[in-house]
Length: 305
Image 1 (spheres, rainbow, N blue to C red):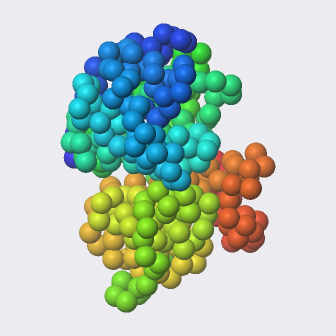
Image 2: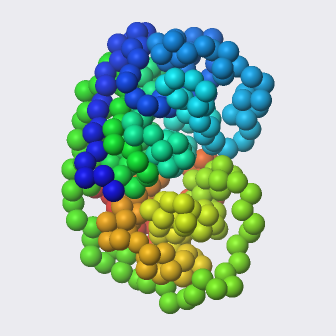
Image 3: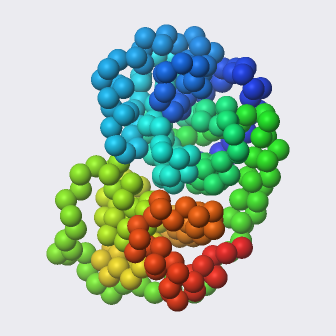
């Protein structure tokens, strides 16, 4: 684990992208017309031809969120699938971090996703990104992270980041996660895993089985994320999740456990905001019903700032 992580919020003048000095650049894949990715490639003097193959286009047009490292260019580039909404996949930044720090073993990463923002500033999505950045020490060898930000929104971004760090400084409630499962992970049966992309999409809707399955899927490669999703499934009464949490916690440090629990609270908080914004159609009907039940309202009262 790194003793310190250098995090920089870099203002980008609208329409003028400047190259960064990061080992690897993260871009949302979109090569059609005047797109942020094309601007980023041009600034780093990387040929577009490296990213225009039909195979790559098909890979990123398939359903679900995916990342891919392109190691034949300099600096290296991680392309990621364009999501339906900015904030529809809360684990997207973590997937990029894992690809950079664990798979690629790079030491510095630049997120370019917010360099050019059209319309209203996507607050929830930016908060999701900075939350991931704040916990980046759990994802490989990264020592430096640059987050590009459209300079028209830089002050708002700084305020959101400041508030996020303030929330993270608060101690976790003593009784929030006091219940422990008493089961065993032996003989636990879940549906066969098809892909991370599919499980992410399912879990993000609030589907309790999808949450438990994604937690199981993550438990070896990313235990912090595993605990996040298993805790959320446990909120919903999943006994399988309870048993997996008990197994997982025996292998995690107190710092890792605190990180996983905090991520679950932040995810839940984001769902409250989405419901308040009348975005229930993005969620599983049973999750919306649970949110409006006594248990859901009780959890909401604990999470709401």
